[in-house]
Image (cartoon, rainbow, N blue to C red; front, side, top):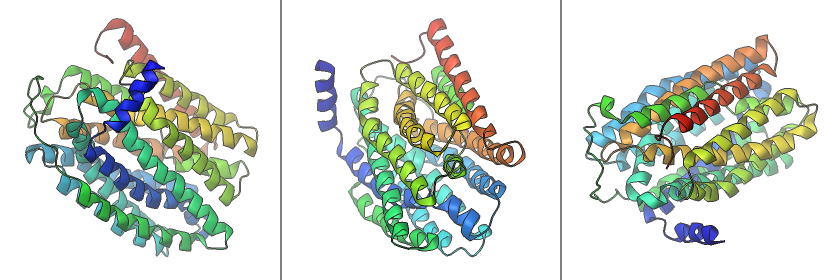
Length: 399
């Protein structure tokens, strides 16, 4: 009970920037997650694109954005830790990309829209994560990232539910995509409340952000583990397609995806706050174990009924890893280098996602729909083993 009370107090102590960025992400993910579960169906049903094209679009969109992810964070460090211009530009670009997708007459236009959306995300992600880190006392880093992910995912719950209501009311897939334009524009309104973090003195050794080689060794170990895991963590569109492949209708697929986001949103903040009280690697290894089991479940699922518990448990995995992994990076990043570190983290995981998505599309088309999930389970298991071995042989992980 004492630990729960401390976690509750941590929520009340969250900085204003963290709360403001939470609302920004709520509106943005309302829009993006209204689109996300509809897009695979829009591509394959409305536009008639093959599944391999879906993997190609996701892979190219992520790949083009990979380089910018690292550069944006590094440049925000070089600009005196000014994060806000990158954050605003990134959200604006994503908002402008959504009408392109909604109006697309062919899959090439969807590719263009996805490129704009991913470039916007690449531009804002590292500076935004760095701003959260810079705005937060060290004892609340896990709670702050957990709260941000919870708000982000709350929008991701609302978006698919609105999509279901619209589809059930007879709206076309294309019309639903147009609705997503409105909440995306609201992100720009909420951004007015975000401010640059005040400078503060820290006892950690300062880092010259021009030289990424001077980032500490534990950071590179964190990066290696997460890149290995990401090599099998393909786009969630393959989970959506697998659910449809197992027999769920378009409406039920979106509801199952909303269930995943509901669990994710409910658990992100408490698991993030918990990682401030226990070793972060304990939370992360549990999350990776859950991921491996869920992906194996999608590979061997006997029918459509299995999709519901699998999506729910998948929400547990992401809640235990997404914000917690970013807090894990913060444990090892010196002052003045947060943007650079988060940029490298996003670029490496994005590059791995590029490869994972392209490979998943090929495996689905040329081997079987089950094959991408077997690969994902295997890479998660390898990353988990690497963390466990590092825990036993060094004191570099966790707290």
